[in-house]
Picture 1 (cartoon, rainbow, N blue to C red):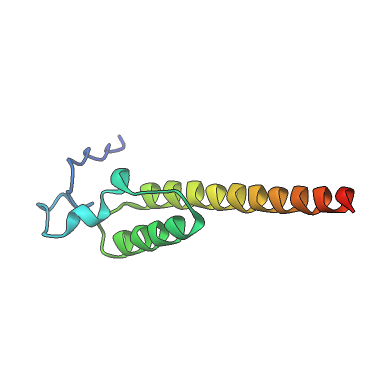
Picture 2: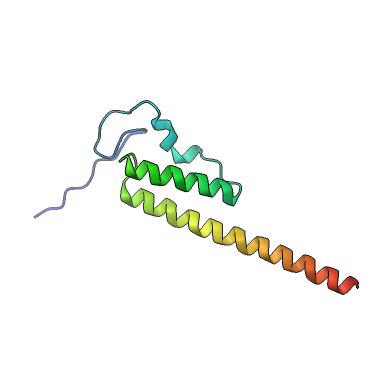
Length: 94
């Protein structure tokens, strides 16, 4: 039995192929700003809501969630590294 390949969605279509709904631009993740962990938190909320409202499929939602998780970890590590470097510099100065 052949597997059916899912249809590619056009911009702002729901997973089931329904026509766009007012406010669907909210789920257009390509335009999202991602400059801080707070931005990642907001975007994760949009992904979660988009998945629950069937505007994003599970593969898309999982991929974005994974990437956001990696982004947050890198941001935290970078922040930690900067703070440690500052502390080491202060200790050398005393």
